[in-house]
Amino acid sequence: MPAALEHLEKFVAPSLPSSKIEMVKSLRSSSLDGPNALNSDTLDHPPSKTGKMNKELQRYYEVSKRLRHVLDNDRKQLNHVREMYLSLMEEKTDLEKILRESYDKICNTTSRHDKEPVSQEDRQRILEAVLSRDEAIKLLYS
Image (tube, rainbow, N blue to C red):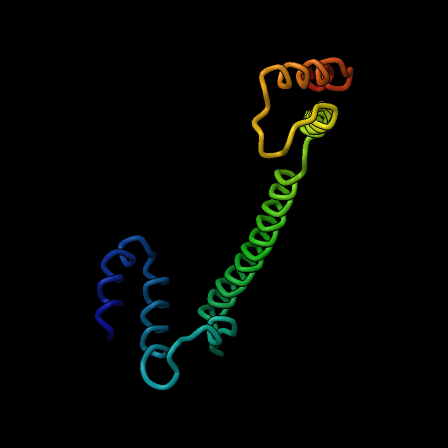
């Protein structure tokens, strides 16, 4: 028996009923030794055995399969929500659009180059232009 499994048995065994411990021991002895070792393929299809143990194993495999399906769906939904959030963050808000329009309008009326900093007077006119629009006021107070 692998040392890692013996170590786990100390923690798992006291919490399991005796029938579960027997099931774990039989799985360990039949599946982990030799060429029939467990891998991801064998977890999807339970080993063929008869009786009560087979029903319990089948139930565990079905629960595992359902949980993996739920996990996959949750991951897809999380990725979708992340994409939606990023697209919202990239969109310009209405207030940003109004501010940009006012900035462009004021800067185009003055003879200013793009590399020159915006003067205090231009900033004041931009804010006045923004605040003169009813949409901006509604957005600010909503």
